Image (cartoon, rainbow, N blue to C red; front, side):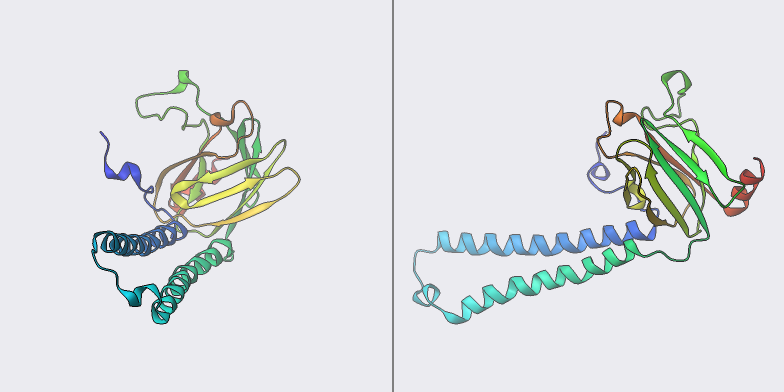
Amino acid sequence: MTTWTNFYFQDATSPTMEQMIFFHDHSMVVLILITISIMYFISSMLLNKYVNKNLLNQQNIEMIWTISPTLLLVFIAIPSIHLLYLMDEMNYPIMTIKAMGHQWYWSYEYTDFKNIEFDSYMNNKNNLNNNSFRLLDVDNNMILPMNTQMRIIVSSTDVIHSWTMPSMGKKIDAIPGRLNQISLLIKRPGLYFGQCSEICGANHSFMPIVIESIPMNFFLKWVNSF
């Protein structure tokens, strides 16, 4: 069954994604008002049987339709610049995880905890059950604590990949020979799904990302199990 939620963003699980949704709604309100105004002016001109001589040569009107778009652009640009700054800000991370892209799977390394390292492959059809998501489930989830400021370092060993998590508003390229980093904070527990969004080869669509967010005390128990 198709609902309106299929045409909107995923539920936000990070402050960055919440701000991105707010900015999207803010911009859409401005665009809708502009569209309605233009349609009104066009329809009034087409349906009007008379010609206003002042409308053909009027300095005040020209000033209005020159200044108004400038103010609208400023009204959109200020929250946009603020959001870009928040997305690039690195807020004193408590822990660091390295995500490496391969053809075609991801590997993760928890450098702050006993050098925990594992590969994450997509689940094949023999490992799927009724609760699995085809082409989205993996054999080893990326386990992360909730309400914790983290840094994800992303790179690649072969070609350019892209580590993408839509519900968290994160998308960063994994480039061979280069380290890119993003800040991450997850606000609630759960399973969150993403995929490589860079066309990296024949099996590009078969390297999903699964983040499992759990409370910190359970995360420490998971770390101690290694």
